[in-house]
Length: 401
Ligand SMILES: Cc1ncc(COP(=O)(O)O)c(C=O)c1O
Image 1 (cartoon, rainbow, N blue to C red):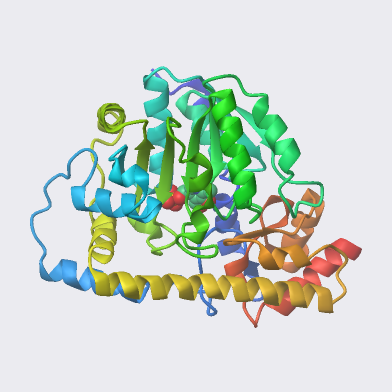
Image 2: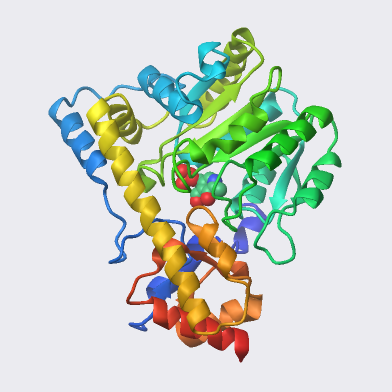
């Protein structure tokens, strides 16, 4: 027998990671890659942050056997990341009404969340923001969901369109799943304010929706607690939800694959029961998680000195991104590039949408060697004093010419 017929037609390259391959093959020395969602420093390098280096030194010094981890991961990791998400004194923690499983990255958390929900009888409809991270529709479709979209941005692409967003969510049926970006919305950098989160929480309760909070950028926006505005909107008695955390970005541990799925339930018995089903989803998928990345995060979060160092490291990445936002806006305005750029200064996280059409994105790449994702999504960390003038001149050329 041969492989299934459809496997013989090559699938399209991943829209973001595929572009990285094209960039690599581009011979132009002035090329600039603003497409991939990986933090880089002023020299274009993804740093190993000092707290991670020190944690690795300590782990090596006490290296032990490499036996399997429990299906849901190491207990000390699980409690540390739970406290990071909610804060150790939060009612969800003190009432023990959450259960956390260690996962391979935020993507692993999302896939386990999808499998857990479907295997326990969830609605097959998931509502995604339009726009969203392109892997969301693909991941949830492959797991068996039917994605639908709710409006997110206003016509300028610079603000949440609160009334259209809420109206979209009100169109969901009872029991439907809704995916919400916890902070640093990818691709827009535009987040709901606390008042809007309260309104989202009300609609979720009214419509009896099941939220998944994709929390891939905690601390990359304005701070570890500042980026958890969503929590006040959703942490209501009886409201059950899932949180998918990634430690790829805020610990710069991209290739170690470290993340977590946390289920918040009405009480501790329901949380424990949910975890037993999460463990089946994991066991039947990758059996148990990889250890090294999670051991680094565990070591850092459970040691006060290392934790303090990590917060300094994280602030360094966050502040560089904020400075780059300001530099980008200043340069676009100074060069008289037509557009409403000012709001980009106060957006959150690694991404901003320049609001470019497909032709303009193609011209940036083909004529100027500037690689951005659709709608002109740029990785703000990718700018440097050296490449900013090139990028701004190229953006001006494709907008005005
Ligand atoms: C919104 C969003 N969710 C999840 C992820 C996945 O994170 P990880 O690399 O930890 O799987 C990303 C990564 O880019 C993301 O942007």
